[in-house]
Length: 355
Image: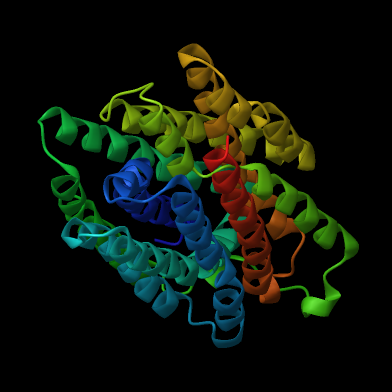
């Protein structure tokens, strides 16, 4: 198996079952923390800090990937932490204990994401950056769609949060099995792309830094879903089982928009990134300021923005960075993006508490 397309599909299957695990948890994390006694400020801080850890540590993970070329060990350790922290949430009795597991889960994601994106970038150099990252994100979001639907069904059966978290052990194990298959058939995916540059971090050009700055502003304004879920639960606009369904709606839009924007990216480049950002701008205002109809529209736009973030934004970064320093580039991008997301989510949680 030497076709890079099949490698993208295998990693897509890993992400499908991974997202089925942790995006399921994400869809109910805000209400779960509320159930455990957390305030909106605590939810904003907890999720924002979790995202900061999850993004901030990626700089070091990316550096480590570039220096050691140990892509697979980082991915295995990261996925194990990322996935198995979720079922463990069924055993906590306070929001403080839940916060520890949230941080562990985000730490795992920080470890495995830069090396995974680097390996994807090597494969997509042959099949098209937009297409490759778009397909991977679409498969990722199929899992993110199925997960919340599963959680909603668990609630429909009158089960509680703890049972919902425990059932996610199944997809976590399947994700690890697909990762083992990917490692077996493609031990050296870096062979798909030949290095043409030896630039180090000081060699990233001005376009790279301006791109990072723009994405940081986007991250600061992109409110995390647990705050949205907290708002919907507290305002009693939707019942408990409807909140994961709204998240599933966004993830479905995410999957479709990733494919569409990825297709556009291979034809119009950066304009596809800008289009995704512009179309998503109304998402957060509609969700927090509107009635039920506007909330549905807001969740669609929010999902579109997420699709752009996870597909074409990553694809364009590969074009701005040399192969030998791509782990550093992805790590740096995610660190700054995560810090911006943390500040934005924490500030939003405080403002929400006083609104």
